Amino acid sequence: MEKLEFQTEVNQLLQLIIHSLYSHREIFLRELVSNSSDALDKLKYLNLTTEPYKSLTFDPRIDLELDEKESTLTVADTGVGMNHDDLVAHLGTIARSGTKNFLAGLSGDARRDSNLIGQFGVGFYSAFMVADKVVVISRKAGEDEAWKWTSDGKTGFEIEPAERTVAGTTVTLHFNEEGKEYANSYKLREIVKKYSNHIAFPIFLTADKHEWDPEEKKSVQKRTTEQINSASAMWTRPKSELKDEDYREMYKTISGDPEDPLFWFHTKAEGTSEYTTLFFVPSHAPMDMYQADYRPGVKLFVKRVFITDDAKELMPGYLRFLRGIIDSEDLPLNVSREILQQNKILSNIRTASVKKVLSELKAIASGKPEEYLKFIDQFNRPLKEGLYGDFLNRETLLDLIRVKSTKVEGWTSLADVKSRMQEDQKGMYYIMGGAEALLRTSPLLEIYRRKDIEVIILDDEIDEIVFSGVDKYQDIELKAVNKTSTSEDFKDESDSGKSDAVKPLLEKIKAVLGASVKDVRASMRLADSPSCVVLDEDEPSLKMQQMMKAMGQKLPDIKPVLEINPDHEIVKKLEAATDDALVGDAAWLLLEQALLIEGVPVENPGVFVQRLNRVLSRAV
Ligand code: ADP
Image 1 (cartoon, rainbow, N blue to C red):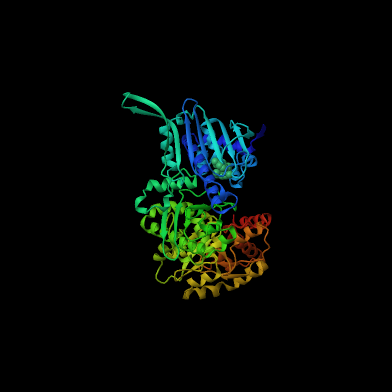
Image 2: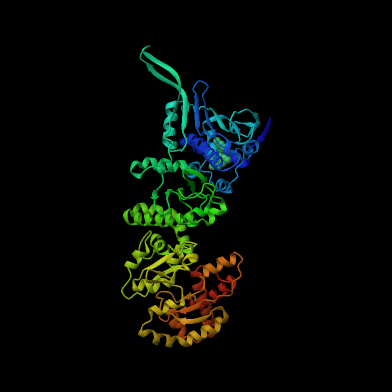
């Protein structure tokens, strides 16, 4: 017999499951049954496609057996099984880095963490919520040896040779005090119906049943075995027969998420290509959504046979939050990974599915706007990623995303921003490159406020990347307010007189600032501020430049254009000033304050403060 210790993360996970999930204890059964179902899926596939498994007799079933007296429950399957090394690897360590990151990110606050962990599949280890001893006996398909794994869920496990007549896995739970309530056949039946009714394999329950015996005229106890689930692949059934409850249960089964899904889209396609898809949108973004090794949520089936749940190419990356299934009638069973990637049938299904999902979302956005906002709160960002990669659906995606703006609180759509445009407005304006509070106080917005023009506020880190490629919404040009060209939109007759008058001052300032700016110009977009900085059309914002530099990218030196407000009191006084030293200090301060307000720190705080103090001492 070997004694092994759990990996540190497993201990952490166990502690967490036991202490935070106590109000959802019953999910232990869902987790064990779904592990069995996965094991059966795997063997079913091998049995249909691969030697030597083809010659095995495959009798798929999951058996629950309750011993009320001993207070034990076994969950046995005839699936693919595990050998010695599998047991050590799968039931003693955590392989996925997503899980590890998740654990590292927990706050230690039990209430908040239990919400988090609720969104996260807890798997086999949840057995220790209800058992103080768990025994697993498993035999891998195609191998002769069986192994027994035993643990109290505290520090580690023991492993030793065992006997099992056929391939598969038997998990025996010795219920603890908290688990005793599940040593009850009615309760078990109820939990299976609730979470696992649509598992595609039959689930049997063997237990003592009390029956009325008419001859003896009393209740007698009988050991009976009954199938307790409907065992159909639910997505094959007509929509008209399915209830919301069926969908919710299916979602929980395939996603491991105990929360209800927000929406689901069930489609049967017939004609040149025949397939069924069922997609769910979770209520919360999956924990690993922003990790490179996220788990794809869509499973591929061919004629009800499970093929893979690990193909990221089934759906585009920006829809990686979807959970669900694609079941094709036309693909061959033995599709390999390589074939999957360039398979015409699959890529047609994918294209049609993306269209379908987006159009369903659009229908929800207009039909149930409040529900849609729940979706946006979780998934606006991945949708925006689509703007960058999915050109085919860009128009639809632009309608689906939501933005902030100077005119409304909360989210608004581009369509609504468009509807609020003024008649002679030359485009839809946006400001980006920094946090919302910073953007909202930017001097660049002054002209828009004065003219009552709405400006879209793009404060998400990824906005600059995704919107840099989007220059139109429908027929309307999207324009950044921090670009030199937008100042043209607000020129009127009286302006050229003002610009001429301020020219000598501009020249002086330019001479002082030298290579620190590209140009110094009179600005028509300011009201309360004396100056602002703007960039040429294709230049990244100052914030973006900072980020790129911080990431070690080499950038050519991009200098901003300094714009000066000819109507501002400071500027007017400067025009009349004769003291060159003062004008020099003021020139730098006008540039530095404009940069500061854009979130760019001054290059040399010491010099900046000296300058500020020189000007202050004159003023006081
Ligand atoms: P998950 O199912 O999310 O991968 P689990 O902790 O539930 O996480 O299980 C870990 C692994 O142990 C599974 O991925 C699988 O390889 C293996 N396993 C668990 N239960 C069984 C079973 N009944 N038959 C075969 N393998 C199993």
